[in-house]
Length: 91
Length: 390
Figure 1 (cartoon, rainbow over the protein chains, first blue to last red):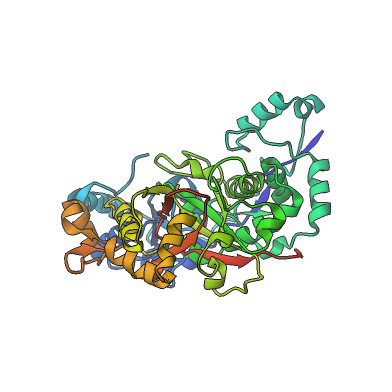
Figure 2 (cartoon, rainbow over the protein chains, first blue to last red; figure 1 turned 90 degrees about the horizontal axis):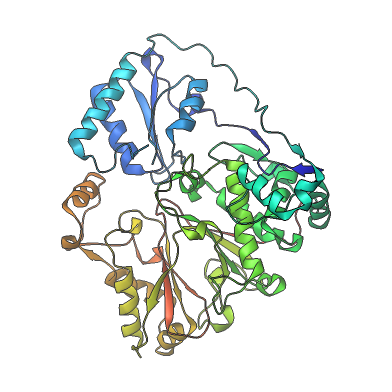
């Protein structure tokens, strides 16, 4: 007998490499969290030390930013495809 | 995997930052080469070929489906090709091109896979337009579906139904409407959840990182008891025509009961409601999404008899549910300060204004109401239920 797979669908991950601003030295950092303060704290901490890093916290609460929380297991792989250096937060 | 930054304090956070910076500094200095495209998922077939006995024996099916993670822990109906095709014949063509891929794995649904989840959930085809409207609603960017499915917070897409469709499909809004016993309530919420989890891939403990979760994740759908409400129906207050049928989705926790058998005035009942909402551990204390006060019809009647409007209820609940700074831990106060959230007059408020408190009427007889806290980083979204899909 044939069953329809309820988990079937073509994967279409968003193009993180284009969403995160490119940085000097070819690295960008995306502080990925569904939690605004966590992503913000981490990203700002990094920026203070490495001004050439371009990055953005991905969350809904900040205006004009898409939501992009991230368990690290998922985004490590996605980001590697996109050529991004990632600090991923699972929240 | 423990929470990466929560509860570690500024010093430990700085150490984490330093480690991340080192990783960045060690990263290649030149431009990265063009990334290779993601390989196709060869291990996710569209159709499973299984022995007939597996589907005919309910226990065999139940165990097989659960082993593959298709269910939610409770028995499901097998989505045979025949059952799914029959479902789609009744529903009609699904405009799946209007749906974006589901996070966190970003799988784009097909008509077959959406219908398969509906069959799994025991959804009648005639009820599917509600699920469809909810699916479109949760994909609004401001709903923050990714966050809701992956967060440590115990939230899930709650579905509130308004309008004539409640009667047409049997969505309950009266006695025990948030509990068991109503097929349409149960199946609509469950079909939505199964579709999101199966296609989005937010498996518990893997990509769904909920610390403890909530029983609302099995299903959470109810109708407003418009007939027992002294005010305009919720969807009318959100700009829809009274004759329209709508769903409203919100990133809800499980409902929290508000017991008040003694109060006989609006002020007293609303004081009990506000004091129940006034808690230091709620996301809604420092995040700005809507949360819901679902008044039981008897409480609503007592309040409205004195001439209170919904807006007046929102105002007084907002003022009275504030939390004094002394009830908030020093660590959380410091965190709020870093987030730019300052107390006003010595109090933290639940959200940015009274309109964050969404007031509904649901349930049957009795002196109980509900407060439904939410994720906070999400907005409630309403959508009309389509008469026809496609």
